[in-house]
Length: 348
Image (cartoon, rainbow, N blue to C red; front, side):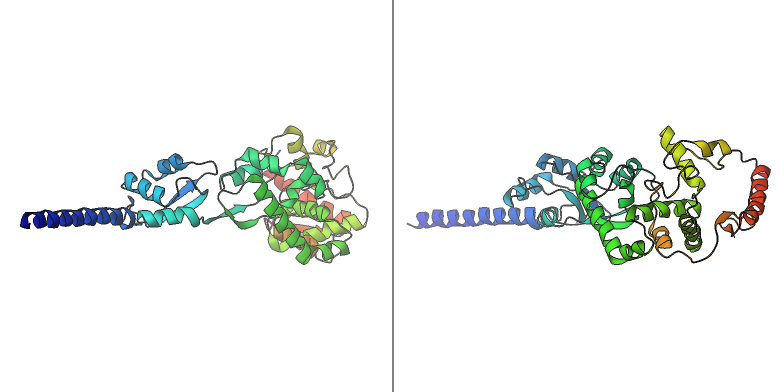
């Protein structure tokens, strides 16, 4: 009888040891630190079509024990429920914390863009900041059904994208990016722009197109309302805008090379056949010649009230311009600028 007791007690103790060891192993697998980097945090990017093997590939350099991670992932049902996005893993996280992070803590990224001259260049800029590639973005941006439904065309589509910094989830699709930008565009116009555009007897697209010319004419934000006032005065008088940046854009659009650098517009350039050439066509171009920022749009909507009809670069105060009310005064200012160009040997 005593031997049986000993066997029973031995079995019980062995069972307790095994259970204790199993409990310790489970606890250790779930709650012990399992990261393998020294920085405060490391970022993981999980694509929309990723499976668990893809996730493990991403995590391999970042965690110590893949077997324990995989076991906990199986137990928590993560293996078949992968979530796309950008995730921040903290140093010394355990498997439980890592999986909870990957399941529910998709963090936004800050997207910034400005100064693009085409949808293609915009798509390239955005594609390095979110998951969608440039082809997917261009296809969404140029979708004919979307454009026609919302009052855009190939010429005006770029004007829908207002330069700024926005927060998106990294796994944003091309269509979602486009739709968000359309909402931002509408919010801007509905909150402050539509009424002022109506006062100017201009459409949203016309304001954007004129703002893009203002953007190209001067880098000085404080001068933009005055430049905008010149063009509005010319429009009201039925004069051609005669804006050199539109000629430069027409050349770029014709050649397809938007990286062309043209510092001097020649008389022969003024003859180019293009709806963007404001030396041959009245009114604003059919679309923006670049992506104007908010300051340029505001400059048109809140243009300076004056009688100037002309302006030319001020070689005595670079970056700014000399303004004139008469052609005679403008020609004097222009001759000074041409002499400076010749002195600098700027021929193109």
